Picture 1 (cartoon, rainbow over the protein chains, first blue to last red):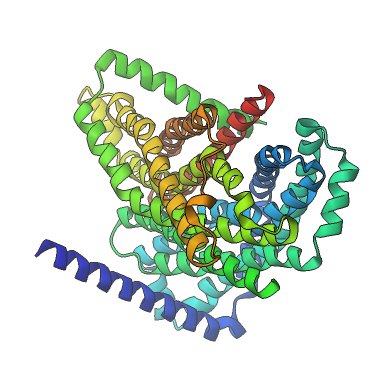
Picture 2: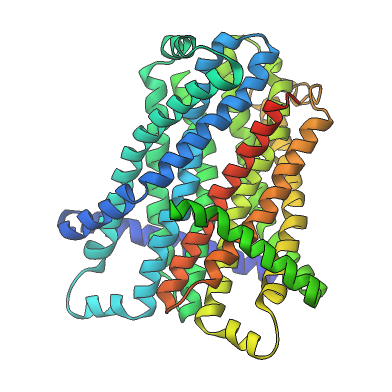
Length: 257
Length: 248
């Protein structure tokens, strides 16, 4: 019965994971009013300011890649003037949020899970409980809030940088004047399109924060468990980002029609 | 500046050392097969399910683009299929592999170096580059193109299914290989193989320099994943740019 055993174990693991996630969400929401301010500030600097170089590099790469990609089929249909719209749409709706989410889950999700797993394995979280402090108010809630704020702020900056790099890449690779690029960009894209990307990034950030925290807090064992938790956090966040990406795209595309 | 230099330099040095060590000591083929199973078998579900969702997103985006622009979503199909084969299939599959395999390699290697198992290996006349890094590099170079192929197939199938059932377009007409030629396949293969070479090297650089306790393991894992993902994006960009400049 190896198949049945495996099936049952997978189902149990999934159930346990969902339960742990639910517990973390609930206790984080309860801990929100009394979250530790100093920890929040530290996490904001670490998550937001610390990720700025990586986010900007990703944005520049994403912008150039999207122009090279859409350039192929825009040229094929002889609709070069629409490149500004197509490339802007691609970055705002799809590649900006997706790439930012994947890179941030690698950097912040893994670090978050590793730190919490280290504290859990070292008994420091038990220690906090022992002296009557709520680890969710001190450790978890500030991280979740900081991650959310950082992702929202980073999304604005990175989208702007990505679009800037797109216009330059369009000029250099396809010989499209910057004025034409921004002409169709501003004509055919509304503020709702900008909002779509920011909403997506924000939800990805929430998923990364909650999943990595849950994985970190449920680490058990020795030093091996810390590396395992970091790796698991990245994998689960990536999987969640793809599933959420699909759900949000169909939802938002249907809603904005 | 030194950060940029070490980002590009360290994997090159690692590759040179690995090649030198494995020409001297030979490559452990059995271990390479085990690593291929580890990398492929464990990443295959993540890559395939991720790419299936990505394919569905691609059709949804094509549909909303088409409604504002050309009217009929089937017109965009062949161009989207070329895009998927040439750019998105290898790039997104490689990113997913980078997060799964990069994290696993960096965590394993850094645990070994923190526990001084790497030094123990050197003491017993083994070479960490030939015995630990080379099998992972071989597994990456062989495994990532395979994973990219599977991921692209999964994305194509789900895109065709979504086009058929959700938007009422003939799925086979949407995913039309009219524009795909040998150059597209070459670009896709170069990207996949480049990422496959780079992911294990970046993870090994981060993993083998870990010193300290459990904290160093977490740190090394993060560094390995970030370097692997960013490197994959850079490799994709370099290949796309080269093909664009050569007008292929």
